[in-house]
Image (cartoon, rainbow, N blue to C red; front, side, top):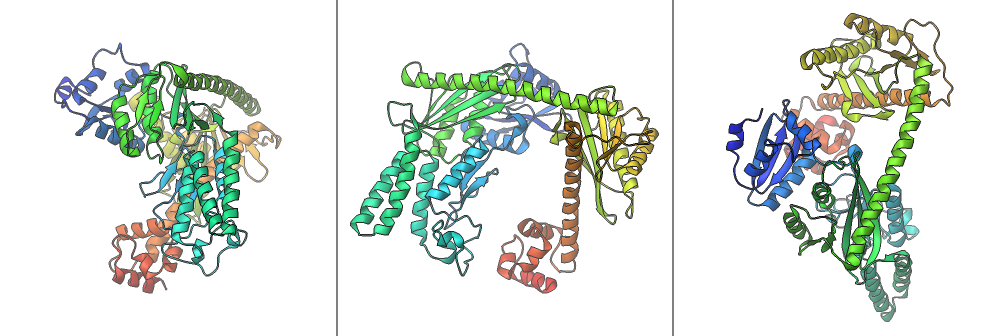
Length: 611
């Protein structure tokens, strides 16, 4: 519990504060010019706090803080901590998606260009994020049509191949893998790709025109023809782009619309006065959180790691931390960035257009939500009728077992709520008490541990807020009569026979119910059956993934046993670098030496032991 004494000792300095609950989980991360004033404001009158923040404050058990030298440093630290901790009460994208980016690996001599969902501090440039994955794939496909980029994943700083692949022979690649193009020529093409991804097609077209003319003057007609074709592609794209600004400038324009259920942020990307892209993002925070607060946190996440930041950003509202955000963006860009709230003229019209589009998208999203909910309700009602349940199976838990002859035995528990997977509630169990291949007993152990823990939490917390305290409307077991009977024994032991339980046998997709001799057979086209199959298959996937990871660790550990100087940490480092014992066996001494802690003598010992 946060006390008055805790609040008194807070420093009057810039920094980041972390709100933690009784379990030590970080539930909110914030920044402040004055930690003392900002943190104390949460624990005074709640009249000025949103319902979301009021709910958060009730769960805060203690506050930790990190001081910084400036508000900008606090902003950077806050951004990193939010990515690392993923706090429950910070502004978040709905479903917490990791949106895709285009990655250009500039740290390589011959860079690659591909789609990724993981941002790393590795010297690469990242363009995005993109919300329309199909459009993004089309963009990358178009890039490969215009520019002969390599699509292999060779590390060309360390290896070469004797012959280039088919892409080289059909002029879809310059053949850097076989040393058929210089790094200077290849990287010039990559610079053109970056201009394209930044939306600066006009600048790119001017550069291509100059290069084409120079090639023609030097009588390099084949090169000039290639550049001419590339220029035509770029000009065709430019013709489709809408001119929205009177001056050829680079802008990002933000608009926001909110209702009780959430928010939509619309971003217009204007390059050289033309609208080259628009992305929208659905956020979980609704109108109880001010639009300014939502935008302030969203903008830091949107631009974090971005390869291109325009010199001017147009906003619909004033941001409390706007000055520090502008300074942070300027550091990333390498020159000054302005955050502006236009009051008149063309730029005000752009902000209004972004706001209007955000409102339309929000309305469309609510209509989709309603249609989706109606559709799911129909499926759950069909399932309720088919199984003779007294309530809708809104929460379904699925269990499965994975092992090979009893070794590395594990169980999985997956959760579907309203017909959709709820990954945060997934659980996995390493089987502890059963030896040998006994799937029935393993299933009993997993179910017993799950519900015994749930009963303990209900008794201790007197609520259903614990990790296991919320019980399912329907419990699905992967298997037939045998597995179902084994689980029912456990539920009788725990006094939970009132739970709805079924077994789903894979071969004939038969549904078995307790105390019923004949199985239920639903149509193969039944949406209710398809939902049960999705739960069963997801439980199987989750179990087998865990089983494979345990087996891989055991195989690696046993394969490296007996090598002097190789302990648990070095085994883990080798596994992280190579992924399997086979790849370690195939690696050269030089490659093994790239692993932290592996010197030449150890690398040679590993090779000798494994060959």
